[in-house]
Length: 582
Image 1: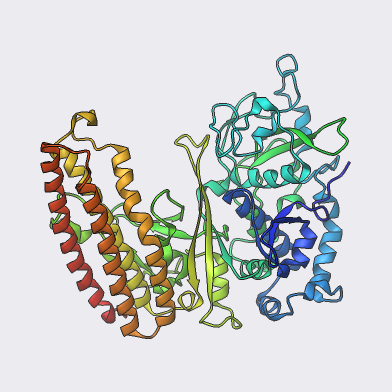
Image 2: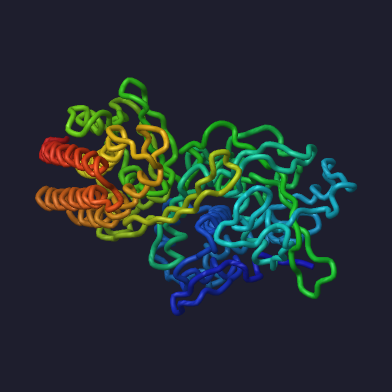
């Protein structure tokens, strides 16, 4: 029995002419991408993982260079339906050569699986009633071991069955987003494992108005024999081309060999088990062991769909380059510079934290902007490769506005369970991707810094309330409750995301106009100041307080008002200086 992923429908897409999802094969998705709006999985992680798989296939099959990209963008959307089309011929040749590698149930090389796991030495037939684990191991929302159910209350004890299409989608997702912690090993009963790489960064997808344009926007010049993109060498290959994924012993840690290796990193060794007597193919079990481990940290040289940022520990220590990750309350918009702007336009912020009571001058050192580009040094690539690719395009007008969609997963403290999934979006004006005016980065940096400082002032307001008076329900004196802090954050941060996105859109059409840029930044500052003020007032008017609690809250609220006025004055002074930035 076979399930050919190239020709069987298994990828969920939203057609342009319908609001109902449908499933297509890999070949159909590529050839008819112009007829679909989006490729959408049942979770943000699945959506990201499926895009990574399709992009690895396209890079490997078409091997585009810069001239190819412009030609593909300008071509008739249905050009791949013509069998004489050059890019169609490249795709067909690759599919013909790799056809056997995409069978989910192939006896010798099943897609992204390791058949030798069935003979693992760690299995004890006397203790293991079945040769495999439940399919709940494969499906992230289902509970296994000590993990919690996530959006779905199916558990491993129910022994759920999966269709081949479902199993294929979750197999791809597991390789990119499996949790860490102890796993059943190949030679040992329990073995530690790294979490899959997707848990360490927000996966950035530049989105167009059709799936075809989305795929093209995330396609970059791929010439591994010439070292393009950076970090990619002649040995680069996706997991389905690699014999390594079929060997049960993952071997020593190693760095990615290039772009397609990173996109399909084999973080697990997996084997799916079919039902033996069912009339239709179904997957009834799975074996999963630790796979290939990453040597070192995730690098901007090899991960194409991540943005990176500078993390400052102090003004006296050099900044570390770390991937941008999604956070529970603060939106990914705070990293707009790292997501969109070229290196020469970016500014960084000091890493000092807000200390002391509201109104103290220590606030002044919190967000001092410094140029990201050190004179004489090679600029680091922080934004995703796709954004840099659009920056260099000659066929996309400056007035175009795309969408940056960012997917992420947050793991628990020990990285053995899923805490949350995230999916966020920010506007992506092409004019900002191409902006070489450092004043753009200064305005965006000041806007984010102002919101950050107001958010810190709200936090200090709540903290000083508990320091000056600890209510009996607080437990230990001087400790504010996590729930109280979280409620205040939720009342502020999500409310400023869309106004900031509007600021980005306005800046995109205001490049070159100082007056319009200043007006947009001023109006943003008014919105964020008023939003923080309303959150502070709602906190201060909490009906649950009595007597001395009201006095303590009033005092903290008064300190906040002083801090907010001081911060607004400093922000106006800083913003007035942007015309002096060169």
